[in-house]
Length: 136
Image (tube, rainbow, N blue to C red):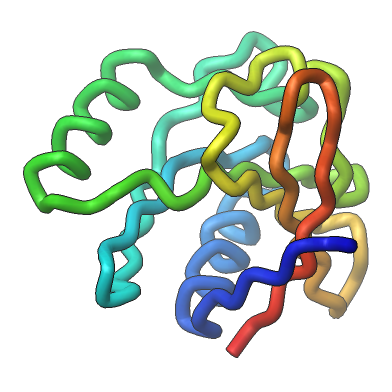
């Protein structure tokens, strides 16, 4: 049975807007939250050689973001990225590069005209667990 996770509509809209602002390249970043369900989105530059179909977070920005999350006494909630030309399904590289098994992975696809395709996953030891994302 799939786990269900609710996210606020404002968070979903922010992620979709970020993806739409960069329709030619995968966007990526981190999302934190706290016990009061205050979410914060941290876009991180994609430094991949071919950012049209893969993402690689800028290491310095990623370190800086984790520091900010700790300073705000929040936790890593999710890692997000977009698929400009593919469905919101993790690629082999997405799985191979995953390092945070407790973080939700959100993929936003721009491959569907007029339909929000945002899906959630947990990556556990080369296994993908699909999450039912509910937007409130």
